[in-house]
Image (cartoon, rainbow, N blue to C red; front, top):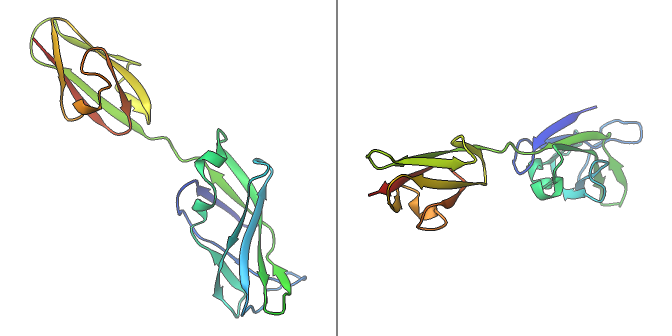
Length: 186
């Protein structure tokens, strides 16, 4: 059985199959409509019924392009992956229905990127920066509390100063890309 793996929210690959008769033999298709239909045991109630493109009439080949868009990250939820049992269906002009052999599509959660927070302070003795959580590299959308320590704090500077939650210290910043901030101290 053919198994496809795609990452949610991508156009990782097209799903291609053949419409077959009751004996599993590919049939010539024309003048009709094709769908990819699938249900998942991992996600009850989530299914698809997507119209497809007839790729080759004579060989019975059809394509459901951009399969990665058929399931959203929100539908996948906290699961790392979900597998759908699928078939291609084809209804010709005489309303006869044929279909492909069953196959699986496994949807995988997209990887969560990490972003780097570069936090420095103006030159001088007795200054410092603390990050909570510590580390400097964070999964996307992590909220980091940045605290300037030492003598009097004046302002946040650097490329991403506008992303700080407040103009005072401590402040938070949400990691949705690599960021650079500078604590200006007196």
